[in-house]
Length: 332
Image (tube, rainbow, N blue to C red; front, side, top):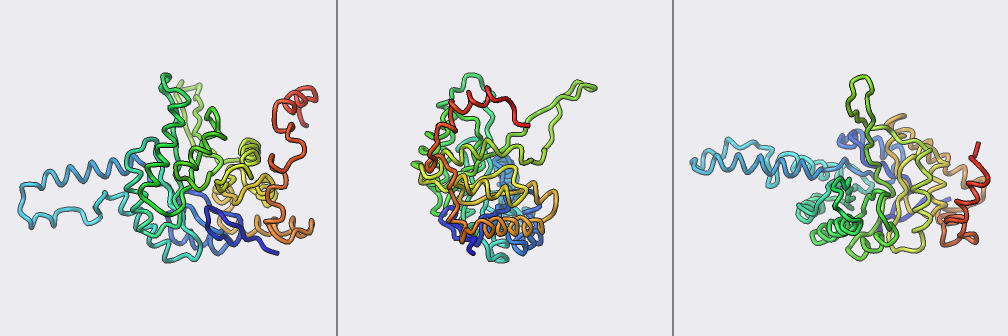
């Protein structure tokens, strides 16, 4: 039986990827993920704000040293590289991970404007990243912004990053755009090789005792899978983009669902945070058992079997199904 797949043109031993998480900045943790069966790892994001802050710090230091003698260069912090402390440390993480692991290392850039993407994507490629995930986290709080302007921003970011690199680019999208299918095509035309469905927006709550806004990162659950499953199914076989299912992946069955929808790969972070890197081995074992019981010889044999493109009942993905569900009532 073969679990092998391809994602972004990369050959993977299986479809399960460890998605971005803080612990992925630690080399020992990355090695444990590889030992547990991870087919690739996504490093924590380098944030646009970090890059900008580091650049401002460097400019401040260099400005103050401008009139000093050459010997004064010894006062400059050693960690400051050509683009700042944080970014240089991130590039070093890419280098060390690339050398230590035998699986693909995917770097991650997180931002909301086009500034800096070209240069930093290029530096990530030079450091050894096998691919780059563009994690576009943007909440359009400006009420004057149109849906077209928001999608233009996404397309512009991809075009900017593509100008700097030849390695594959994936885009981690929010589902909250007006025409996701059309946007997917635009991103491909601008140089994207794949999509990660979806980016989870941090959503606020309110503390009623203090009357204040509260925020926190909540781990995903399988209950969040239906939306990315829907769009994975709708896009699979209809776009040249490679698809990665993300959000809610906690078992082998969850991997199977994304693969049946047409995903090339499946990402998980919350399950690893809950149960540790070794839990990936369990999920892959469950995937193998599912395939064996149903006499599938490979992941390729079952990928996309339930996608929109291969369905004989496409109406179930649209309005007729919605009406029928309302008539039938909630699922117990």
